[in-house]
Image (cartoon, rainbow, N blue to C red; front, side, top):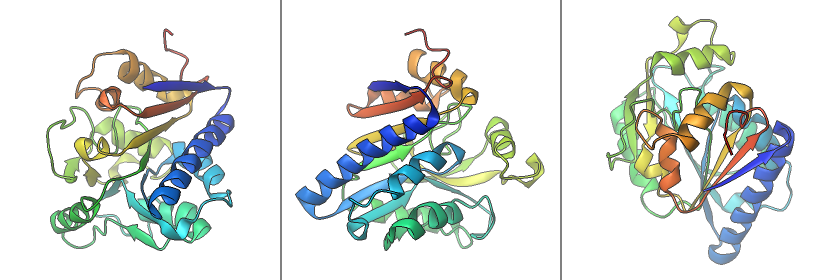
Length: 244
């Protein structure tokens, strides 16, 4: 694992976008096609803005999967991750190949269907963040490190749900769904390269626990240290508690 500490979140975003573009360009050159996993949430705003501003990526040959979606939330809700990706990635790039978790129907059937689709070929690069509770996607602690299913139905813990209120997606915790479909830990780790975008001081404790503490389901993103090709992008605020 490589940890890069940048001065601020905008410099972090540009650095991560530069690397993401390089990985995509390499995949497109070698295979004519690239497959990505895209994260959502406030931590990804600046990164996606920097990435979608580029004119050197053939987005029509990029296929996108997303990490997670709330169960019971309509696609037009302000907190919907499908809405987030439509507005902040798809509309800006013209991506036509994408696989949404359409949770209005049968969540278990949706998880199975999209899981089968993601399993047909390797993922070139995953863009992820980590939660204030150390979660990776919606795999809250204690995370399931063993399941081979590509997508899981998960219960969201209180810390996770409070983070969504704190970021302004919901007015109070009673509005935050209690369950979601989440990409599994093992599926995330199958990506050839993983870029971890983590700005802001509110993530500093999770950063320290996941990247300097024990590798444990209680700090789900700590499992990233077992992947051979991970770059973590931090700013001075999110890295403030690291000892090195």
